[in-house]
Length: 324
Image (cartoon, rainbow, N blue to C red; front, side):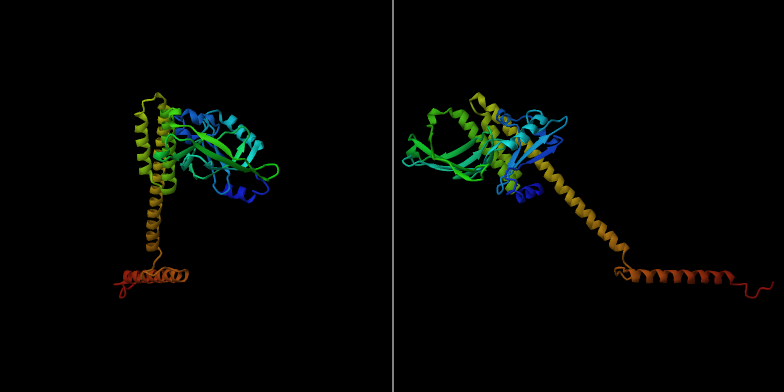
């Protein structure tokens, strides 16, 4: 977050910015089973801050490998080179339906590239795009039963900033004909939709509600549903869900260990305070101050001297009438 704050403060002077996280690659333990769709991107883990649109790329170096599916050095070089090839800034896409189209409703828009996330339904903010970069969006529509079989035409419009002039460019409305259900491979589209929605919803449950139980139940149910698919192309989606289950389990273990460590530190802090209170109190149970501690030391010294004198007198008892 500190890096994001620095870049946010310098946003006017440096409009193109990114954060690169370099690690030893230990967090790549659940990425080895990623499906083929994840292999399209040279960076698997990409996150954007909603209010400033700064991408965060993670690279893993070392024997365990990185987050990317190619050598980390090559992925890192491509990412650095991409900073010099930003062609679109703060890209936004507005979705709707063209006039005369059959009635329908946009329920949600999902971003598939990298880590599926839930976007807003009407306006989608994608941030900066590099040269030849592609983004895949999955649009969920709700069609009334009376309009099934009718033609649905979506209206798509984009606006973005020109990196060179910083002027806002408004694109023209583009008509997009929604294919009818029978024109699409139903099993493939169904599996894609189920997987994308489950991954996005599971991450939302964990990130916003810390609800690991519901997220695990959702992913497990999705995996079982995909395995029942008659189409043989569901394996890649099953692997994606299994990878997410592995990461979810690891994150839950990290949460448990962190909570246990905090509780242990609190117990040690409380126990240390009690011991310290016993040591640092006088005979009356009052907290010691420098002055009271000095006085207590003087009293102890005087008592020791008196006791020593009394011991000497007792040692001479019986010799008072002695003759030498």
